[in-house]
Amino acid sequence: MHPVEALRHLARAGPLEHGVLVRESAIALGALAADHAALVLSCRRLLQHQPASGPLRWLCARVLCSDGPRREAWRCVEEIDGDATAGRLAAELPDEAVVVVLGWPELTAEALVQRGDARPLVVDALGEGTQLARRLRSRGTEAVEVDEARTGPAAASADLVVLEAAAAGPDGFVAVPGSRAAAAVARHAGRAVWLVAGVGRLLPPGLWSSLAAGLATGEPWAAPDEVVPLDLVDVVVRPSGLLTRDELSLAPADCPDAPELL
Image 1: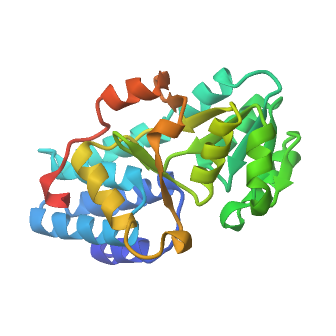
Image 2 (image 1 turned 135 degrees about the horizontal axis):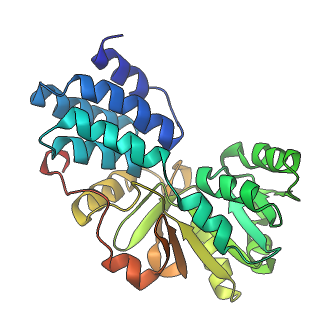
């Protein structure tokens, strides 16, 4: 398949796991490495159709700012395939903790399987929570399905709420619908809120502002993603370990602020 056709297919594919999206996009973008104009146009079109993916924006920014776009694309694939965030989260979760999660967060789900002793309350956000709860139970974890309407009571009664960022910036992050409500209820009830921000999620100010502005159009209650203020978070789990909210705001971004994408 021609790389442009492959990118067109990816753009129209709907929601995909971030690792799959980066891997398949890297193949096609690498094939366009010799034509910078085509590379820029392809990146912009990809982001128009997959606007909430931090790792895709991270890939595009690194490829466009590199002297060797093809080589850089494959570095990104290696880094996201080797993401240590799930292992960090599994190691840091309190023993036998009751944990609220929403939908099917990729890295958090992997950590819960690794850990085994956690007791997840899985909110059925985007219709994915029921599937995750079944998957976790099949792996020996005591997962409980929670209807979206009961997100508040679940967040108020759990030991902690674990949210996963599709993208994060200096003052907020993108997550599945219901994340802001879960975090706000947990904060009011004195429960901890952890944010999982894996490889490629932490964007520089320009790319973050562009992403957040794009998601702000239309009716917020009907959007497939929502922007959550970072001040609702207590702890951020990154590949390097745990950070406080203030430490995250000072941490270097995962990619440069590519001017072609602003």
